[in-house]
Image 1 (cartoon, one colour):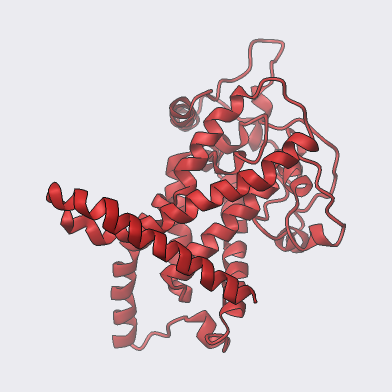
Image 2 (spheres, helix red, strand yellow):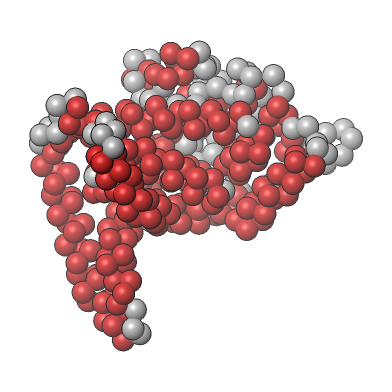
Length: 333
């Protein structure tokens, strides 16, 4: 049943992709002599359509919950506007697709060299005997990539320069359904490359990769929703809940409780439970970064209000850190 639904959605997106390309894009590219880029753009249209549908579905499902069952009530929602812009940029998937397409020819070359020199290749679904079971194969890839995502997330908090990029995400003090995609663009490129390399290495097909990313994005939007969702104690130990992830965003323990933070799981809390970084405290705490708060000696540290300012301030903080002029609270153990 689920496989049939996924197939129907894929056919729908494919039909929209073809109509949009043939009816709009191809004539424009032909007129301006850009047909050499037509194939790449045709592939990217799939991501764009999936992204638009995903944003629409996410807003339709989650925004009413935020309005009816808010965890926090904000009278001024201006701080969310930039996050909406981040969401449109990220959900269109152009960064993920570009990195994947760039790496695919290189990885194919590596695979050829591995065959020539008899180096074992990893095709995970084939090795596990689930190649003919698409849903099971999908689940295997989702779990493997989530484990990789857990470690990427821990490294973001562990290494100072990397943290300054990730701090763009944590600097939002009004966490909502839009907050998931609030990231530094350099960090987004690094993350896309990281997942693309792993996906190619374990045998993920491009079409499957699109769905994996889309499912991951949807679940992470739910994690950031500003709403009271009734997760049962068992369910929240199977999949990351908004309460579990909000603890990760909390000022104080969210960044410092287990040396560099807690609740790093991207989709599943299993890795936190196994590796001792889980915290199940559901207290509604203020979110953000400690040095955003006013201090007796001066004012709060500036992380930027607009998208460009947030990108720039991250580089400025990296410069200060490399120059050794400041010790950050994220370094406190």
